[in-house]
Image (tube, rainbow, N blue to C red):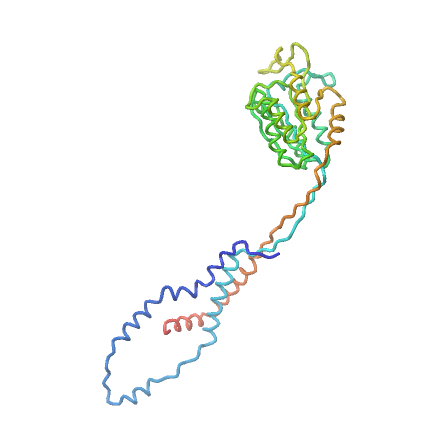
Length: 346
């Protein structure tokens, strides 16, 4: 498929022919003025004088005609190059059927709590989330995965993408408190719903990883869950955190024990129930298998085929013709002189 990217530049094509009409030469106007002033010449042999100065009008020389043709060719070629001709090659991208998974990860200060042990080593909640969700993302071949971080506010870390490797790398770079010390759980759910509603119905799935304490943001968790249910978005919640009365946390370089880091499982369970999803504990080794099984029962998004036209610029060809015309003009300097004399005598 061929097209001009800037077709409006064709309006400049008749400019060389319009300029003499719009702005006539002043010398021509002066000649017309002098022609109106007739003078009488007295000579005893007027017939002989007229015969002596009468000459046949010479025909247009080939060099002058060629010079004029090259000038017009140069102008037309430059305008064609300015119009940016291009050849459009169709490219069709087909995506396989899959689910649209938006993963919201709590990145508040409470995710620094050290209430998990891996291989005898004490680790924080964020390390557990990275390990659990990292394996989950790697196993979701064919699904579109997006990431949301929420703390004092909610942010889109990655839009829905088929590049699971890139999503996994972004998740690995998350650290506690990167989104602020508080927890805007409701805002994170509302943000995920607003992005998933752009996708086809039936495959909208949101996975929320949090400790359940909502203490910031504009949306309450229940209010956001009702919004998700209205749009047909299922929410699966993974709760992280232990039920210990006093939980260690790393603060200002030292480990302190706090009693306000417990997990509100009631709120997380309510979010899952309202949207038809499910609630799981991060310490449950069967959590990922159960989530994958439930998601597999949903309707997949149909395969999408999108066709884009990739432009291949062709301006080099008219530009090359313009350069050849310019070279030809330089090879015929005599034609320029003849053309100039012809314009002066016209």
